[in-house]
Length: 166
Image 1: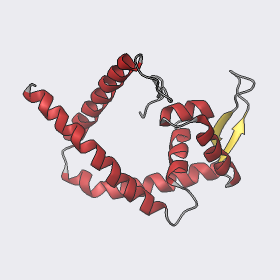
Image 2 (image 1 turned 45 degrees about the horizontal axis):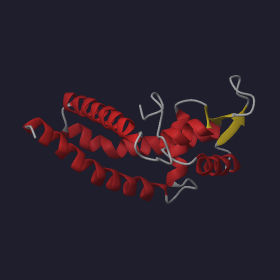
Image 3 (image 1 turned 135 degrees about the vertical axis):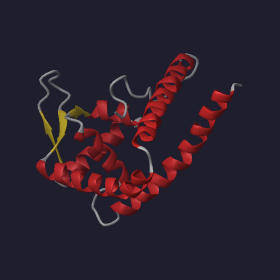
């Protein structure tokens, strides 16, 4: 293995603990809200614009039925509404309501505030380089998984290009 390959492996080794610790921080911040971690993920995806439940489900690697339940719960809280989809009569679009936009903005602003102190300690070009590297690693591993996926029965095919986290 090349030295660069070893360095990329080190990046991947740090992704899982980063994900776990960030999930804990986010979950802790949500304890005062009526939003769960999974619902937060749906709100985040809908903040990018109206989508069908299957689109959100693929982008989150979750079964459609799970996302439907989360969207229905968000509708009950007044954060999401379903609207007609001009592209498909039967698959309606889920979108944030003004209340949902406000709740998402509060959640997101709180998360960004928690990152500000670290961001101040880092060079912005290092942060941009990190984003580029993570994007390339994601695209590469997605390609590997899709190539090897022909030999495996995946229950969830994963997001389509453009449905990944931006």
